[in-house]
Image 1 (cartoon, rainbow, N blue to C red):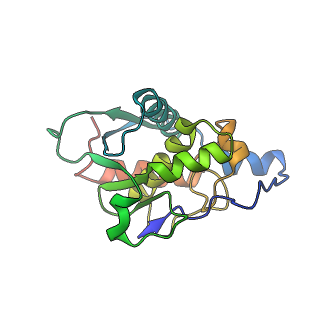
Image 2 (cartoon, rainbow, N blue to C red; image 1 turned 135 degrees about the horizontal axis):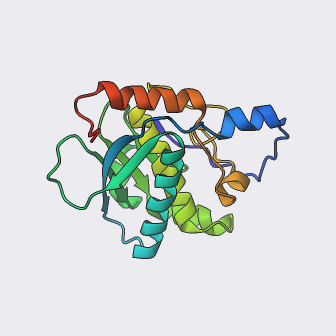
Length: 195
């Protein structure tokens, strides 16, 4: 089980990057043909509706830059969609997560989990809108469903530790290689909706 377990608790680490390094680590060139992905969110922890809408909008923006259009669906009718469960810490106790884990997913499955009370606490401590952090956790965990195992990167959405400064500026992105792998998965997999 992969988890986004490190959230720079000790403080922000600001890394100086060259323009070329920043471009390759934080942005993905839009793909010529958009792929579609259907996602249903089950909120079991009482997220404020506007926070959830904001988070979904951020996830959509991040994936659109990688060439993937997300359709947020409320019902279960469409087989092959991905699911995000937003749970509380008490609800994830059976999964044996560390206290720093804010989300987890198993590559190759269709389900990801975000732990909302931990996300809310970190967002408050870091003076970050809760919808921003929830959005990036969801984007990261969906990335684990679309990418091969052990897909953490040095920077961007799939970094093992969140760069709070880039998250606050809404500048975390998939790398070009990650975008290409996700598009390949969506093109090849019969289980995923590709409209």
